[in-house]
Image (cartoon, rainbow, N blue to C red; front, side):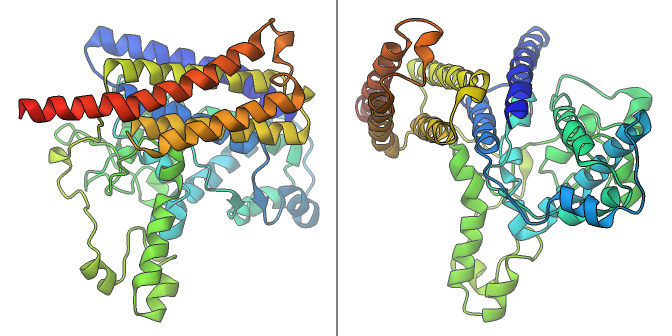
Length: 424
């Protein structure tokens, strides 16, 4: 895990730099691809996924180590060919796990966060799931295990394969000639993220596009059908924690409400979006039928709130980055407590972005928990080693965060409400 933390400490600055470059190029080209609150939500979602990974929050049903030990038919020594075969094998696994996530009702909850943005940009690539804590696709690794691909090779190649999926989440790159027949390009992935009927459930490939062509799920981006992004049932929140579990919560409610016992069981594994007839009639859900008339989710956001939300994100990123570079010095429960604090912080400021009153209560919780951690240790996880007074700065931040949240939620919002009604 320490090695993964080190890899992230190098990868994250690279991701942020590319996101900034994309933003500058979009301004130069006059193609708006970023919306402030959406981008903050996307980057915050990336932080939550990092916290999940660093805390080891995963349940492995059957480990790859066990499979390769018990199933290997041959033994392969490390070579360039082994790494190439591993990359191809992981891409095959990626195609089918991705396809299952899209087409099975419960499994869609593992992936909805990635499609929840109504924009399409490099930031939305970081919207990764924290709800997929159970490794259910172990059976897809059986071909790699039969070939005797060593587990340490998988461990090395897997992050490279994951990070290589970042670059094509952009609207600024058009079609790429002959590469459109070999690799996944931005054009292919724009189709995948679109909610247009022509584009739904297409282009599942992660690196090599030939999987979609082989298995009949390829769709070219059409010049007269501009992609519209998001999900058919809009999430209508900036809070990544709510997005991560809202689909499963909806299935659970439908399973409880339906009178048909068979429907209570099969709803979990039916095609994505399936609902029992009696529940659909009594509890209708708004689904986007015409993507071109869809209104994007937005909330009352003053310039001050947007600036403060950016500051919250930057502070959270800085605190997480300190965790990454100090990971080897942290005890297990230090990591857990640190992750809980950052999770509370993200839940709080993204709820404030939604203008939800719960943000005030979670800020009180964040203040209390933060002060508890500082009092318990006498400092903020030895951060004063980096520069003197850092702990006092964090204490000041905790109080300022609570005060401003109360201001935005209880004062500014009421002022905006009165102003809007006076104009009306």
